[in-house]
Image (cartoon, rainbow, N blue to C red):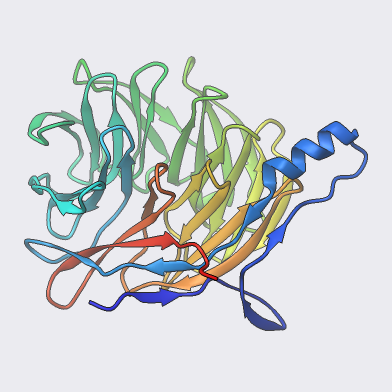
Length: 348
């Protein structure tokens, strides 16, 4: 099969294929700090190559959130429309058994208890064995679930209550619902920052992001995401303590997670859903309707590198930290597929 190559483009009046180096300039900082900033954010931009789609056996249907289990070298996608969890071996690109799990959305890895955790719209958390994918147990919740975030420090799972202003706290090991945290508005996506030991929650109905202290369950500061409206995707760089919140209007807000200050905003494709941060390249990937927006974090904030076309129906993604490849999943006329977007070296 012929591989389709999609050059990564950046447009400023006119479009040109990106093969460039750039470094950021810092002011009012020491020479040593400036040198470190340049070293930290100095990158080479290469074209993304879309590899041949990998068919997923079984029933066709739409997908929701995706996740990579880095140490197990596996990719997971909540195949909500088919009622299964789609799984791929990232080393061999072999599609694994797709266990029946019902209509699930959020996907998290609990390495401590060797579990895959799924948030289901059927008012439950589904727990699978991390190695065999066999179902272990379910934990009932008061509402259907959407996005979920696993706190690797306390071993608890935090579950968005669909479009209810609540987060449910679940103990996966004990199989118990522990508490409910009230939110100031409807949630859309939640992430855990191991570096700061804090949770961050997008509030779609309030154009804001809030912090949640896992130690107390208390909701802390509420920060506006403007100019990003109806924030969906959320990611964090634990090293720089920057939040990236993607609004439905096609704006990516870059926010200081320590103060709530808006550092900058970046225009991306409209209709983003799941986004992911790759700490190895310091890039943010945004799965939008019809495009994959690629944003480079810089010393001063962030900048758009380009918008790469993607198949219809792809609105979530995951990044493999080992290869820096970006993965999507999408339905097709005859079934469903995974697809890899890989950086390739320029040939001379």
